[in-house]
Figure 1 (cartoon, rainbow, N blue to C red):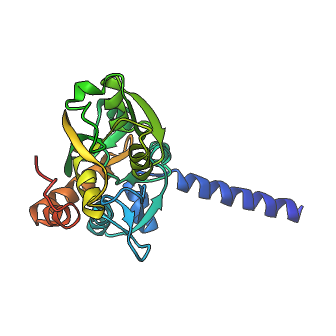
Figure 2 (figure 1 turned 30 degrees about the horizontal axis):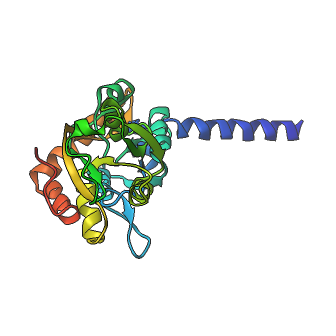
Figure 3 (figure 1 turned 90 degrees about the vertical axis):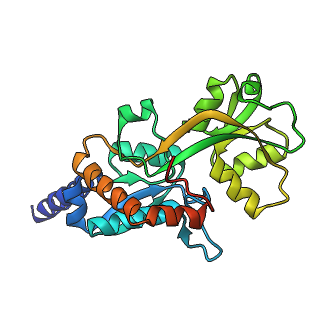
Amino acid sequence: MKKILICLLMLLLLCGCSNDELKGGDLDDIKKRGYINVAMEGNWKPFTYHNENDELVGFDVEVAKYIADYIGVEVKYVEGKWDGILAGVEAGRYDMMVNGCDVTEDRQKNYDFSNAYAYDKVVVMTSKENNDIKTEEDLNGKTTANTISSTYAEIGESLGATVEGVDDFNATIELLKSGRIDATLNAEVAYLDYVETYPDADVKIACYTSTSFDIAIPMKKGSSDLVKVVNEAIAQARQDGTLKALSEKYFGIDITTK
């Protein structure tokens, strides 16, 4: 009987832990546990990446830290692939995703978003020798690559391109350099950072698309209290100049104003 009671107690404790893990987006729970669970890819420079010392750094890493400081808690970063971490936010495994996430109508159906803290101009990247793509309309019938469910993949498909799914930006560039795809769509700032790191790289901006997005922070549906305090933090970071300074530090330009 004693063993049975002990087993039941352990089961209850485990169940209690599982329930706590599913409270993503709950401001009271965040304050109670003392940290905010932030999901990001960790391999999309300069938003989130590892430096030469293998430290997680980037524009969004510091934005997340600012928000955590504003709330008065620590920040716990969780790295993963785009689809997984976005789904994890929806399921409540993470409190939020800070990873250069564009706001779209479809995503607004599944997530609560903060106010915009940056803005995303979308470009078409090709090899330097490629003269077949000069406008976004030229993507029709071409092959591109992006992470599946990303806004860049959606834009490519809407323009008539066949989109090959990849895990991250680096994999996309490798396909482009090897000639296995015609082009890729991505953020202007991602291109600028890449050519700064690899000035001799065989890539160029073929054209700008007609699409630009608000970059904001997705949270689990029903996270109104958390959304409110995150918006307060973003407003303060904009007012005190932190957002502008961080943007210029990592991108070399200010992407925090339209």
